[in-house]
Image (cartoon, rainbow, N blue to C red; front, top):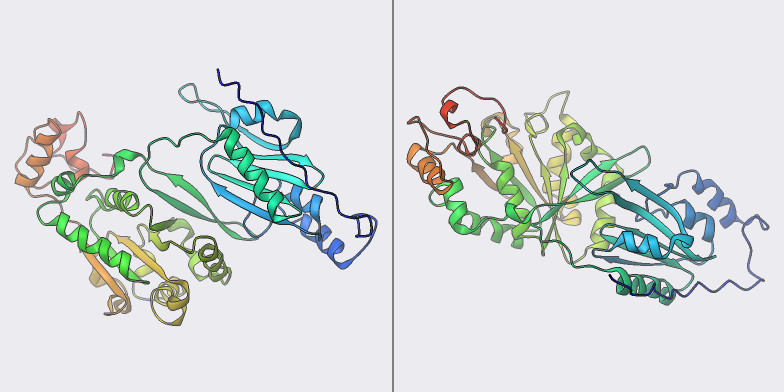
Length: 383
């Protein structure tokens, strides 16, 4: 059993009595704090807006923040610091999984708070050194080696007040060897992949279009790409249902904040099943197409430095031709169905046999226990 003692956190020093105290002096800063309190999150720390416990503790007075990404033993942290826990979310899982803590806030002094979730720590104090001490002591006491994983992406989310993102970690099995890439996508694919990743490393902005019918492996390749470029790139995923965020004025501010926080990374935005957003401009998609054009080329692109990867099921001839202009288009890749000989090689590597001589999608080759029915028409990746 791990009997390591709880960390000795240094509480923030109180401010001198000559400085205004919240609730007693109605200064401009205090009034501002009271107004912003209603817009603060109850549990989750936001990069630009501290959540309610921090707003209430610091108001308009001195506040310094220290951040660290990693992996933490939150169960032990809660057990050993239960008296300091002022905010928490407990996620109860099904019978096959374990319960989990999330969005924890500990208060170790009047102005000494620490926020922790599964992959980040944020310390709040009246001086930079105190904020850093909170984070480093917690890390020293409760850090744990991360589980083996592949890459990751950040799911962009929008509410009434702001745009944020949540990290999603992928399995280590999503990263393929060169041999597996060739089996999955056919001859010449490894060479194309190497050329494409080199472009992503060297270009600051541009559009890449992955075209192909459902089940041909566009999403699987994106997962592999996220793992290969995990150290140098950050991937952001925008679901088709929330594509309208592209044209929001606050979207530019979101990217500016991300660049400040992750200055050593290149950014890749993934728009999956983006057919409607890329079609020739009409009354229903004009803003989205214009936003993609502006983000991928011109002055705004020079400032934001975004790579954009769009997956489509339609033909490239059906999309707005401005997206295909040289200088904007980084890559156009068609994901085809595998010919019978290529599909057989992949099936044999999986210990399976294809019953019908025809072409196959990746989804069909991987459809377990259904090979005897694989010649029947199917719909969707899971079929």
